[in-house]
Image (cartoon, rainbow, N blue to C red; front, side, top):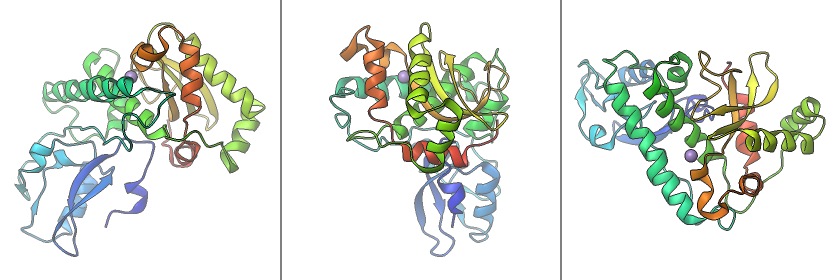
Length: 286
Ligand code: MN
């Protein structure tokens, strides 16, 4: 079985994957975050001679078409490929705050496009980044790795975004996260104002973030385009994302036109703070 801690790490990008169940020797679908070496370790315990799914199907993602083509253990694995995690709710589930048409285009066109272009960029990299989780990829790339920067960031950022949105309205921060937000920003209201301001002031396209920075402290920041605070060679401030808010016009223009602040209010009305709290605990060091 996959250790629970590896199966639900919220601060990396999981995927639907197919891994062998050592007990039943049947294929079992998991949401997981395995890295290649983890997969190999698990696969090696599943029995000699067992057919295993290609590594492309796990950890950093995989194309279902490849997952359908198992390879014999010991063969050189296929290159890692990434895939979108299924949206956990319908396109219309966030209405009226975020409309169904925006969701369908945002998830089905924009995010999907980043994933496809990321996979193409990895294919063109001659294996230089094979085996890295998405987090590791973002931590590794340099400013000039343009396609990986834009599309790797786009994939990570949107996956975090979808997982943080909650149909039916936001919860409120509680417990340790609430106390930490209050200690860092003065009050929850002050934090929310700082976060909203980071999104409103981001010129052009980009993201507002709540991160845990390299000193272990909560911090609000923003990045341009699809940059991400895990990009230690790129971001002005690096850290581990807890919450990310997309302020690209494609996230809101159909419904809100130029009223970005109205969209920001809508976004904040949908945040699942239980997910943010889990990211705060399990987040990776910068
Ligand atoms: Mn977007």
